Length: 522
Image 1 (cartoon, one colour):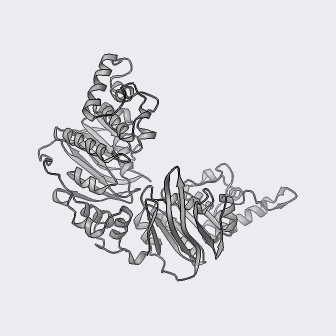
Image 2 (cartoon, rainbow, N blue to C red):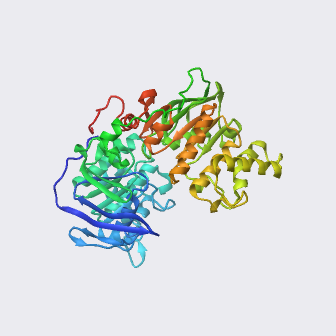
Image 3 (cartoon, rainbow, N blue to C red):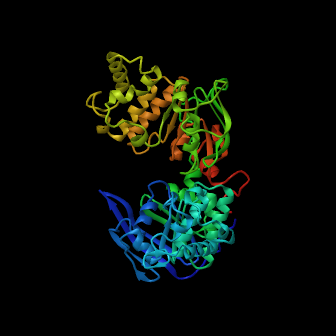
């Protein structure tokens, strides 16, 4: 799959100085974006970079606070997605936004079915539906357009959504994470359609976290970070390592010379340490490719990779939140099938999730109730923890972790993000786990709280706790871990240990699969 050659046509879409603010936070800060006819233009950036906001401003979901937008030289300011579509700007999202119970033909022409006097000409609808699908490729013309959409695969549903967008006379097509639920052959089919539409003069904006796919199909790349434009680049002239550095706010030279590794005074893993958890060929179709993984007592193993690389998906398999469809797990050498998080908890595993608001805290419960939740689950609800013991446990962890709260009975929603995270950590530590999974444990909290959490966890590691650590901050991964497993595009691409555990080595591994070019896009 090769990328399109660069084109030099006049701008089809120009956005200049676009600014969008939400309650004091600038989601977009003077961003420029240019799309030319015939380009497949990748929009890249980590979580919170501003990609989604830029698309929503362009498609009329949000009004822009400042800046201009021109389509084919004419100023535009769509006030809704429908208004944008009428201008020729269509979007296909990761979650297909069609009506699953209706047929393919009905979805293609919903609201504009051919007919007269309020009567729909169903024969004409089906003929036009086949014609619209055939434009994307001869194979699609063979589809039975009378089938309900929900009887089709996700790939076919996306093709229908694209065909609908194209039939609206779209000049700009935005594909937002279109490949996240597709297999390799389906991705190839989609890329063939994208190239065909680009060759016909359409401008395509491609939003994805899969780097291999960016270089396979795109000829231009725009990078955003923290709501600001980092730059626009020719894909063929931007090495992968440089793309990652720009997305993460690092200079390549700085990242490759910074030595993370073990911090002074942090003991390496003992060679005779017991393997607490081992996974063999563990994977789930559409989620993470099968891989081997292990973590020992007294060891912190990092999972590193860009957003969408499969880090969270893999630990969800380990913890039983999702079911694997391949591979095996063993705890302390004993084969085990973890059917649910409760099974994992009962076997001494803990999991601090990425989103503490949605999957961590129970906001209306007190700090005390949040902290004793897992321990009570392990004991069972028939063996209630006595109030005096609850207070003793809670007070011990409030002191140990420095949780700032008016009292243990304060609803946890009133605590700062850092103190909420400490309370979630206390919840799992109160259950005395043998393995603790930390998914972005320091995201969105202040530097002081980060240091306190990292220090406390490392103290426990040195006493024998096994830790799996996920963070988007590679410097933090390098500083905290004895080994690092690197993921890219939902598969394991490298494993680093000892002196290899540096920010630069991790970035290199993310950028290039084994046997790939060390510095250039392919």
